Amino acid sequence: MSYRPQFAYKSPADCEEQRCVYSFDATNTPWLATTLAGGATIQRIPLLLDKDADFYLRGIQTPDVGISGNLPGLEFRLEDANGHPLSDTENAAAEINYQYAGLYSTMDGAGIVVQDSDDWGVFCQAGSKLYLYLYNPTVSPIALTTFIVNLHGVKRYSGERCAA
Image 1: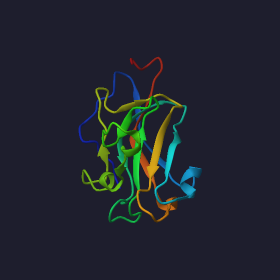
Image 2: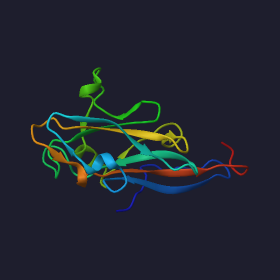
Image 3: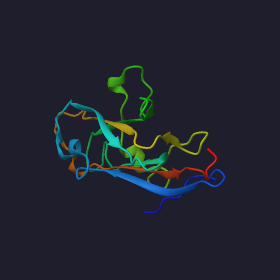
């Protein structure tokens, strides 16, 4: 699958940007190698980013899960390092601020929901963590071994050549 941002993004003068996809699944995130019981949640699963450069999150991609997907019923929420929700239903109660991940796998043609801000993506400082929340509203347990979250964006390498 190829990634093409919705809008053309221009790098700041003399900055080097490299396309980057962070992929989190059962092989690199121990919490995703488990089973989520019916009615249970897993909160604040850390998704650790590399320390070599700042990351600008431009899209979220998940497998087709939700009401009719391959993981029926599973809902999720993603937060940035400062606790700001990047995907939720904007309800006042945090325990119901989850969305079907299937909504994120079927939109925008390539299966990516675009995350946009004034600086061409959601800023994530080098070495920071995003947090994943999972919720199983059904009565049946859900094996999380096939759940994957892909974070699409760019790493912006800075230094003397980059005017931030």
